[in-house]
Image (tube, rainbow, N blue to C red; front, side, top):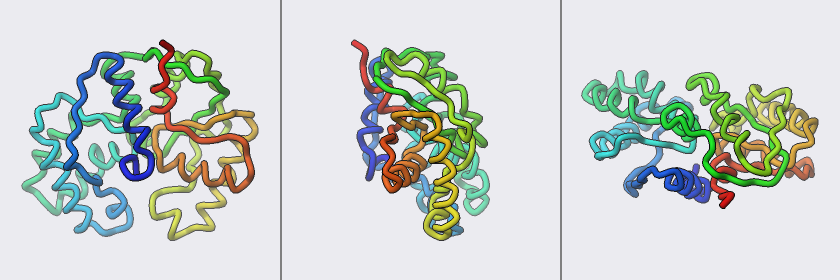
Length: 234
């Protein structure tokens, strides 16, 4: 999702990490973690991608693996455990990689204990808690703590921050009417805040929300938290 549709969010993640002194390397061989196929029930096809992911990242010499997505991180940390019952030889690799991979905001706050990354962003911003990040990785306060240190940003909470946006990968395609109804409820909560921007830790959720905002003619727009933090106050 980041590589193909929102590459600037990935670049901004790197800008933030390098700004605070982290040495970043990127392996261009990497591809999808396999979650879309896994969620749709194509486990054997997903396994091919999971094994490739583990082959690339296990023993690559890095201390940590950081992803601008709670969803992808959850796939590796949580669901690889289920998937790799089909591939026992990869279980040790999975455990090693699982211990090293982190969602971006969790890495900043929980691992580096760094909340002020020297960012500036003008606007009234509300935050969507994406399902995998919140429910599987317990990521809720981390992005909020980072946003509160951004110069010029006013953080406002929506009532339905923890409610699913209706994306759910292929769920939005297979059950389009249900997905759209869920997104509409989310949009109503967003509009009540008067926010200029909606942010979050997953591009997939933000793509779903932004599409509904545009269809309703709303002035609010979605922006990944990496794009907010990537703006330097210097």
